[in-house]
Image 1 (cartoon, rainbow, N blue to C red):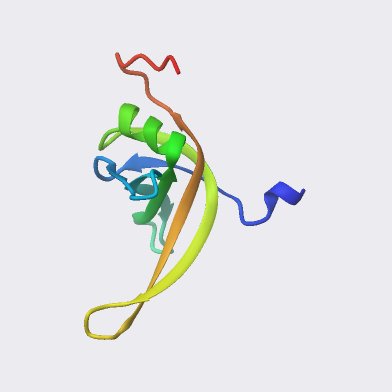
Image 2 (cartoon, rainbow, N blue to C red):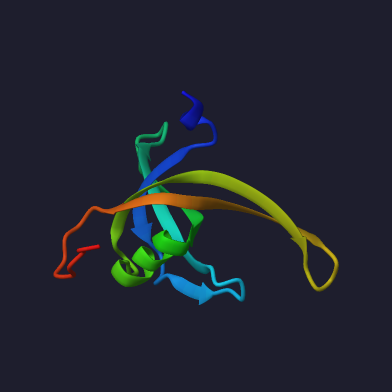
Length: 117
């Protein structure tokens, strides 16, 4: 059960193409947004769809996979951990960010891209 601490699994669609950068340290980082949807009926019987957006961060080999095989709109299942951080913006106000640090990802729809790595 040790691996279940701070563990998250999500299924959703990429909201944009991954943005990939190479850091001065030689590490690669990929960032993208993921939309998850929840559908339910309100007490008055109306259908409600609630979309939640998640900030996803991938490092090194996972970032390379993301860069090579993923694009806006694709449905994926991912596993990672939640990371919370803060920073001060230009006006000195503290901003808080929650991100999912990606460890595994699986495309749920097939395309013509070969994934032989």
